[in-house]
Image (cartoon, rainbow, N blue to C red):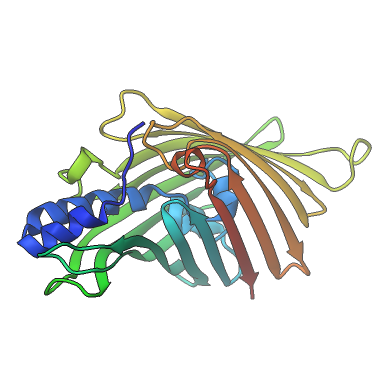
Length: 324
């Protein structure tokens, strides 16, 4: 299986010898992988099949068109823990007369481990911090069409603490944008949404180490069905399906998710991602959610395969969402 290993001694040696090109290539590769990690407990539980999801701040990270149907101000905080590091993502969206706007920040921190030097290298600790700042805008055209766009500023930083060589900091930065659209329809009385999104376009990361390109095209659909009260009261079942493809993929890779909601307050979710072998988020996932007094929602998810799970540390996600 292809890995993206932490190699702190190699990085430090490159720093000490002035091989900045090699270090920046590694930074570029880490930046590309960072953009592909899932953001949000609900998204992770649904197998990241999110291109046709709408009405929450999650759209900022998956398809900005989904923000257009947000009806209230919303703030969400997502926390993740995996072999790749500790992640925290904050997003805030609000509706204006001209549409819905949102801002967000996503930070991933990783401790590269202790560095033990020899005659030429000192001892220290290497740290990696990956940061994405996002601004989004979405609007609704009529009652069926939603459009959206996001701009991202990306920064990956390697720092050394303790006894380190001179000028140990390595900084890599880039920019990217997302574009998306959604179309709503009803078939036999069942509401459907079809979504299309281009994510992480224009990062300039294609030439990074390992050749990883974070640009993706997503096409998918979602449907929602309310079970008749005679069978089950206040139960809504929904399903979502995506096809995702990058430049290096030979075929589209499917993602599928499902959710069962009871009384609009308890949510059970599951998903599956058919992903490339170097993925952090491939395989099965499960999650639960609870809404309290229509203002606060708590979501939790766990993945059962991928790089972290294979290494004995399955990814977990926790999210808090407040509407006001």
